[in-house]
Amino acid sequence: MMGNIRLIIMTESSKFSGKCVAGIDVDSGKWVRLVSDDEKTHGAIANRDLYYQNGGKCEVLDIVDVPIIEECGDDIQPENMLIDTSKYIRYVGRASLEDVLEIHPAEVRNDILGNRYSYISEQRVDTVGYSLALVEVQDLEIIQVEIPDGRLKTKVNFRYQGYSYSQMSVTDPRFYSVANGTIYDSAVLVVSIGTPYNEKYYKFVSGIYV
Image (cartoon, rainbow, N blue to C red; front, side):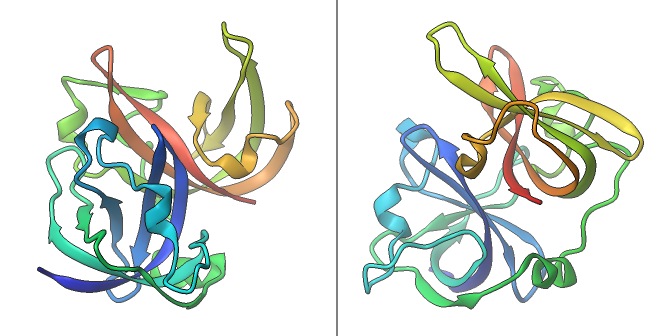
């Protein structure tokens, strides 16, 4: 048993029937992805486990103490830590994006998560070495795409390091209802590598800060 780790929560994005929750370790400035032992949801955090003992709900940019059982990262998602769901997470306070960037500045790389596409191949994904990125982008455009069952799927186009990225899926529920074609001059994004699908690991924009 590792004990508690103090995080600034950066994502509570959609993942199967629960949430993909990731944050910045206040002490080390490193990424942490919280995972459960639920294999059916690929480690998604159940919504019930995001409530404090007083009944309040954990929100993005909350500073929290999280009970951790062990580190459980692998070659693809080295940031993973197994949460102890028998205990409550504890609210400590609130942070701003500026607070986050002081601890963990926006990352500057040649590309995002291994290449300039919306996915990375199964053959190359374990060479990336990280699965979460905090990046500052320009010309962020919200796209609402109708899928075959009639629902809308939120995607984004943006520019990073002078290159265009297109049709990257959004799992930040705060932006599901933003109008199609909305453009932000600049934004800070959390981009994550998800679980495999058809021999590809798709990238998801799991947090948007504008």
